[in-house]
Image 1 (cartoon, rainbow, N blue to C red):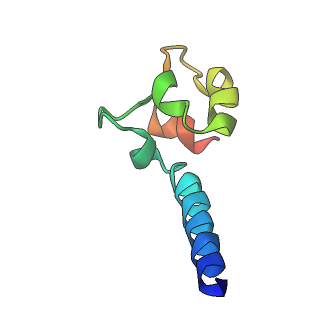
Image 2 (cartoon, helix red, strand yellow):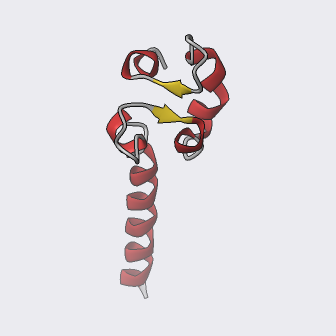
Length: 70
């Protein structure tokens, strides 16, 4: 039973690490068009909450330059 608890803890840790990895520009740019749409940003609640502020040119997408300011 102790091994099962360790396995569950390891899976939980790996899952949370994967969530943090999603904050990489290239990972978030799912369609590979060189910009992050609001839909793509929705997987990261912190980024989504800042999206309109970061989108300085108001085109509805974040460029690498805009994303770097996050």
